[in-house]
Image (cartoon, rainbow, N blue to C red; front, top):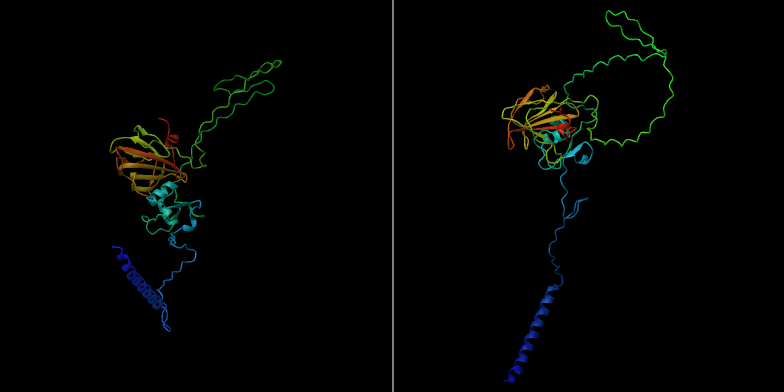
Length: 319
């Protein structure tokens, strides 16, 4: 069987030589013929816009983008509504709509920048004029004894008694002052920051129900008060209705603006009895208690100072 490889070797060599020759001919053909232009694959050129990064499309510029991050402006976040934005800013949603020239108050876009403070020279919607506080008269000071030792006393009705001279004071040598231990400084108690003059408001309890839950700045922006369906909800102070309607997580909601500092909110009502732009008085019935968008009948009551939620218990009278 040793003769088989010797006979096959020449055959294999001939086939290899033939393949090499065929490859040479193909390469020569690919080099092109004289006078025939070389054909290249088409290339599509794309131009990157000036200032843009390759592979990224410049975002659409939304209204107010040039004011993003500036004081007095707010960038719309997912889930925002104009009413909620105005509530958080302590403003009337109609004012915010006017300042931003919004044709449709129900349409705000995520990323849109809104003005939430009045433009220079613009006054927010007028508020009811609060009556001036009554100041108790200060009693007249009783005159101090004169140096002569004579005291003048008021004459009672029908009395003819004359002022009496007191004996001259006897000089007494002063005693050495006793040493008093330095008192420890009193602990500093948290107090509510001063309210601008003219913006003080004397609030009253909106309902008589028991306190269900207190204020928590992160989880509960107000207090919850118990009650029965249909119980009256009263305005905590004089003000103007800046919102009356339904709002997610608040249910049927009334918002009162009392001045440029304070707002109050009354949520989860069964029935609303006031309309927007209506002026109300302290103690006026503005709604009836209910459980709209809540797990039980209750009133969620908020006090907002310049748009920021504050603890209502610091502003309501003790009971």
